[in-house]
Length: 370
Image (cartoon, rainbow, N blue to C red; front, side):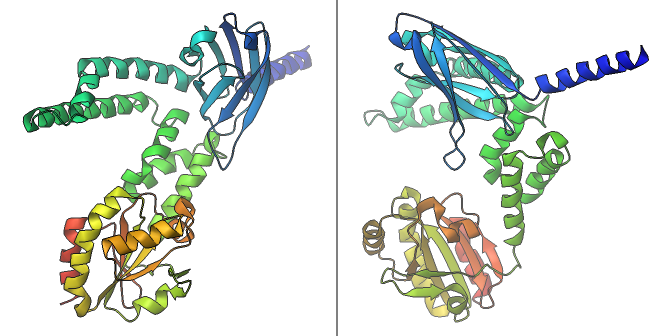
């Protein structure tokens, strides 16, 4: 009898564990569309590098997905023949999707801890948009027929709205700072954190076995290790890239001839980069004779646009690129997730500055080019 009780307990435990390791998404869509009679529904994430897709048959408006996810994250559901898609934060839990064919994208998703919080967030964000008159604010900011006073007032209101939304986002994870939703939000905002803060937050996930195989933990840890290796005082990673004439330029050969060398990550399609270029031209002219030089590393993908941008902005210093856009090997080597961005090294290739603000560049150069 005792053995039977132990076996029964083991089966109950196994069932409980299994129920938390798989997801079930049951959908019921009403309407007269032929797509609901005998169609196909698709469930997929939006990761281009690691796409995951599941298919289910739709019979009389009803479909069901079952499976498991290693990394909970936003997915979307579509039904072949119906316009729009439904967003769902997919975890290994139970979900329901209810809606109508004429407004499929507005279907209601319930279930899951993260989805429940996101539903509350969406409702609160909508209330904030109404409270701050967001539609009117955007209309004013996009109009050329308003006064400067009206524009400034609209911008203040918009900033207040943005701050309120950020407070709302923080409240999403306040009661569960180590969770699937919190981790996903961290994966979206990590570039704004200093390495100490990011390291502390990441340690909490690395210590939790539930996140052992989560892709976001691995990606954030890789980013963090690169950031630490790019700290001031460390040797800058070497590389070789071609200039517009197809001639190779090796970074370590280049910087040893200068007192200070700047890596300028930019692209011809980048508005902020192009706006900054006139200032950088002036800085170059002022400090070049004192031992300062620049290598522009472009994240362009079209060679003609790259060359045209160089000519239009009067960039007379060395330019290199592999024309791989955000997949630039040097960009990835230096953890470049936004541009313009810079790195400064001395004659030995030691990093003396990184992500230096526009207004602080001359201060750094004055210090090292005395």
